[in-house]
Amino acid sequence: MTLLKENASSILKKELANKGLKQTYVAKNIGVTAPYLSRMLNGSINLTVEVAIKVARFLDVPLEKILN
Image (cartoon, rainbow, N blue to C red; front, side, top):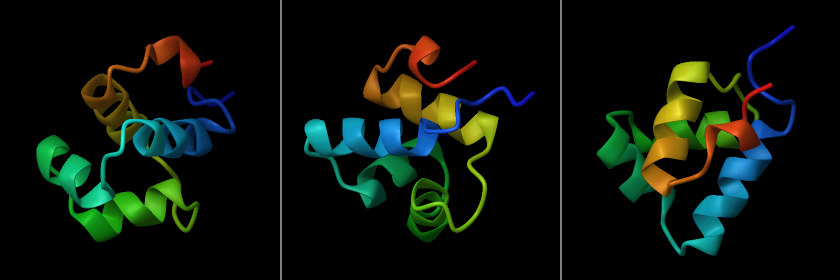
């Protein structure tokens, strides 16, 4: 069993859009590169628990929305 919900990337991507924030801005503020965050949110590479939690906290998204 994985710690992240299967749709965690989509949830975070939607929250980002709802708040009108750009991935580059969020990436800079959580300490990752914009291309790295983009690949994770688009499903090119697996979203890590660490990055998911950082993004969720930055966006003020309850962790229960993305964690199993």
